[in-house]
Amino acid sequence: MELRVGLASAPFQMESWEASARTFSDIPADEASVKYALPAAEWVGKDAVIGVKVFSANGRTAGWSNLFTLSVVPPLAPPGYLEAADVREGSRLTWQGDAPHYRIYRRAAEESNPLTIGETERTEYIDAKTEYGIPYHYSVEGFRTGGDVHAFSERSAEATITTHDTYAPSVPAGLAAVASIGSIELMWDRSMAPDLAGYRIYRAAGDGRLEKLAETAERPSYSDRAVESGKTYHYAVTAFDKLGNESEKSAPVTVIAQ
Image (cartoon, rainbow, N blue to C red; front, side, top):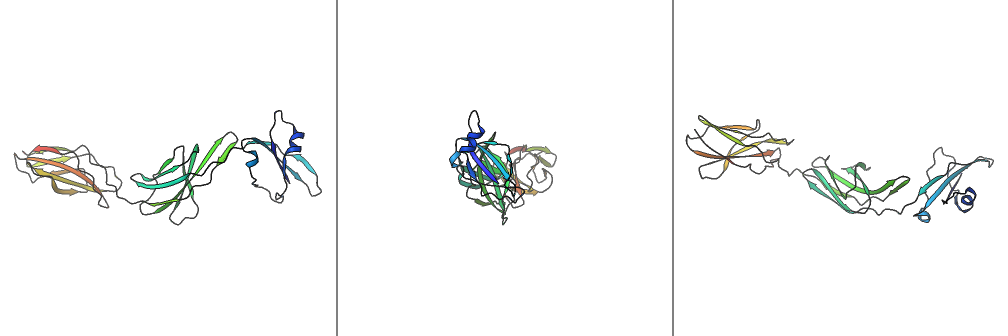
């Protein structure tokens, strides 16, 4: 088997290409599918024409394969300064580089082979599919494609992070208070946090400070029956998760008990 690589010309002349092309003959000929890597520095910034010729045992050949023209582009530098940060959405990756596109790879815990998890044109990426307490190892590869151009950088050095749940549910919204005979009924919007454990109700009487009144793990509502008619009360609500992370207090509401 013989591989030749030469420069494209306009108009293309087969005889001229055969005479000037570089010949590579150390190619395994006993395999059904052949992969061969060769240095590209000689053709960077140029169009290279590639052809293959197969010989029989007695040295006869059917001629050249179809000729393939490849635009050889400069290699891309590997992304640098990859960093991983723990954010509410998952793992936030940032790096430096000048490639037009990037591919992100991830290994979880002791996995040996990284998997592709996404692509981006920016120098940052958020991996939202993580689990708390598991170490993740990330690397990034730059690439450029278009027409017959396919250029890839080496992967960056890995960045490792283990995410932890230190994020409280969002602050409850829509708190409203309605005075009924002998009670004050509180209602607010249901939290959509997947790890929600419940709500805490805070109350202040008159000019006093807000203090914890009760907790509820069920509906986003509470009935305060320990009130005195004619007295002014202020209420606020927080949401907390299964690890005890508690949100800020909602905007307070004021009501006079009947």
